[in-house]
Length: 107
Image (cartoon, rainbow, N blue to C red):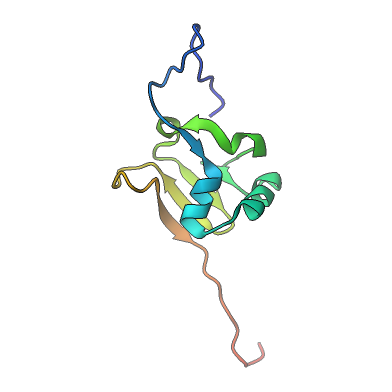
């Protein structure tokens, strides 16, 4: 995941694939706003295929083609990135953490 995107002439070696903003992926998948996303990245709580995403790499570091089919994981759940889905969606939520609320009964 740390491979270079530049060829010897300085052009992208991946064609015309668009750059990815992982902040937008978090917002689209779970409604996580920018401030909360910054904290998730800063504390190492966002991973792609098990590898922690450093905060500086969260915006426009990778292309869609590089992330296609990979799994993004955070405290809210898992998202499959840029797989075989309609072009209007960039991701599909695979697993979402459930929130359990206790009723009026003590545990």
